[in-house]
Image (cartoon, rainbow, N blue to C red):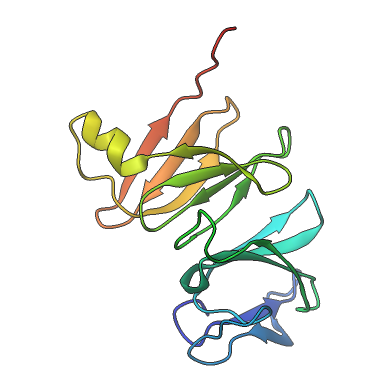
Length: 166
């Protein structure tokens, strides 16, 4: 319930009904591993077959099993992340995109190590548009390009994949 009490409620995939499983929290948010504070993005990571949760207010990404049990931390607080909002994983390359509310969108490798940073506000300002603030979601397109959705104001931006020739 993201902005509410920082709990994740598991629903039945077929019926859409609540499965009587809730995890995360506590109400108002917690900071211990296995606790969440503004769980903003919940994604399936096919690289490890676990839920990957963007624990935004704790500035980290955490893995959970489908029964709600904490598994491990993918990216610790105090790393390059500030306020991760979501994760998109490109299954072909194993790369992951993490938009951060404070501005950048990060590209991580299959071991969740930082490999590149997209400076969403800076790139847009350099192009003469200062309306690209607060990335909230980002996805890989089939071409390898990246689409970033920003909040306040709501905008979509396209960043093209550039391959450097050696």
